Image (cartoon, rainbow, N blue to C red; front, side, top):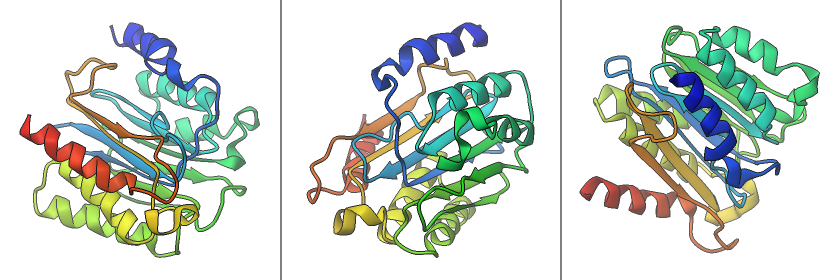
Length: 238
């Protein structure tokens, strides 16, 4: 069933992305060690950053950002489904055919939750890099300043210590990144696209229980992270 849904998601669920490269600035993967919920979120000064990552419920998540490659992401997901370790997945995605030096990778699996793996290509724009903790990975490029990732990770760990829900943790992380400067290309706007996605262990691959996105905002207008927060609050009420 998972194999069928994985194939369906890669051929149909992301079809709107076509073959265009996706650009993203800061993103987060979180796995709840108790509930085994898996969440990803991201924001960018690009038209649409939704699709940089994907989750296999009960397995883990893969993010491929900066000049994002659908091929690298598909390979990572197939390996994740086959229970490859994050280290093995990152090693394969660094194959030169995927153009890894222009990309950032992050992989966390439930089986290897304590050991997330990341890679930041040498051609990705500064400030760039990644920070990890058990069940958490924070990565970014084109950031406003060098302490941004540290601020985001600290916000995640604080929210987890407060026993916030995984969706709250992800929203707080996005807001921390925005408050710390966001995407430097956006100036005071911070981001023109943002998304949040969370799956429960028994969710279908193409039907996460939380799946919200903001995209296509006019440069210089609303901050996508603030609009996503409003959309998230409405989702909670529903």
